[in-house]
View 1 (cartoon, rainbow, N blue to C red):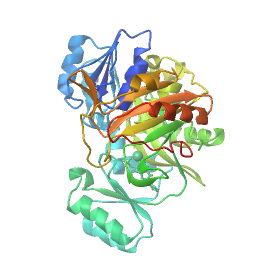
View 2 (cartoon, helix red, strand yellow):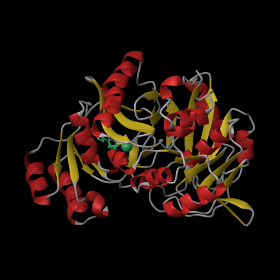
View 3 (cartoon, rainbow, N blue to C red):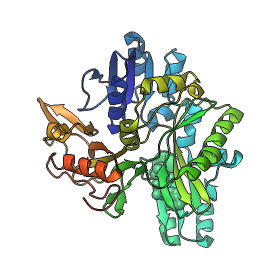
View 4 (cartoon, rainbow, N blue to C red):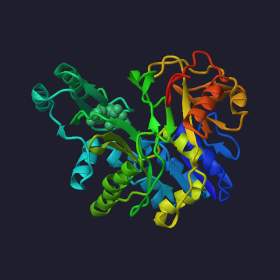
Length: 421
Ligand SMILES: Nc1ncnc2c1ncn2[C@@H]1O[C@H](COP(=O)(O)OP(=O)(O)O)[C@@H](O)[C@H]1O
Ligand SMILES: [Mg+2]
């Protein structure tokens, strides 16, 4: 079978890497992919949002399975287009992908179906938002309704900060139409963790838990990023908590999909806060996390393609994949200046040495080939991902591999999953 992975980040590289290992697969196409695509995978120069072109190409190439990486492609209805063309597609249809692309839609869904979430109010009028903010309790959280590249959430300690945020979103339209509606919600205390579950429309299959590190600096200092590193397991959830997440989040989610008639065959990745009252959903992501995917797929022992196909065909209840007991750690190496502006086209060295031990895989994110040389091409450049018997073991190996790699101005957080290494 030929498989097409849509997207160009580290997540899609990890998917292509694991899909290539399936005995069912003769060829993987990364569209558009990045500098890390290795045989038997191959890049195809079509943009991830050029959906009609992607469909035509997939039909001509007789692609047997499409996996959509990015949220914006799903929000545009990529899954609808492939399904209408008769191509099996992993990823929810547009109306279900709204669970990620509209935070107010997700809130309504959670309230209707009894899924625990933060108390909130939705505003479409900035004067009404202002009146509310002037008498609300602080801290609170202001969220742009739509997709905002991870920059649409502000934790406000004071009314001034909150008003500045709604001013930027609703009046100055910093995020365009994504900020015309805002969700204002209570600030929750607890430990965050990332849960992933395959959803086939009528059942779910939970993956091991993981933890991202969103802030750019050690000790969770500085601005938010797309994610500076992940570990799995997260250490934040035990069996009792997992059972509650299954029941209070996933069972109710699947039940809600059926009641609302939403067609969802893909990955659900809820951002969760584990509070003293139990799990609370902060948001739904309707696709694999980046860089959570990198650690999860290093721990998956079974054939990913079987799981993807079972998801598309509504057969998840028939399979039970195995996950390694080993821990995994992914350290993101980034360009100087990230998450602000940064230089591109800087030569990258040392990846072969980093992978020499066999326990480490370096997933490319912002990389490209230029005149026969591997160079930087984005803010998050590489996800150095190692496994080990314990988390400490995995972290030690990952950082040893990081130390072999160099490009000008490269940096990483040295505290992913624990103390400074
Ligand atoms: N209600 C909340 N209470 C405390 N922190 C929150 C709350 N909602 C969001 N956050 C913090 O803000 C981050 C981003 O919010 P999230 O809803 O995940 O939006 P997005 O990923 O789209 O930016 C979360 O990872 C969490 O750290
Ligand atoms: Mg989030």
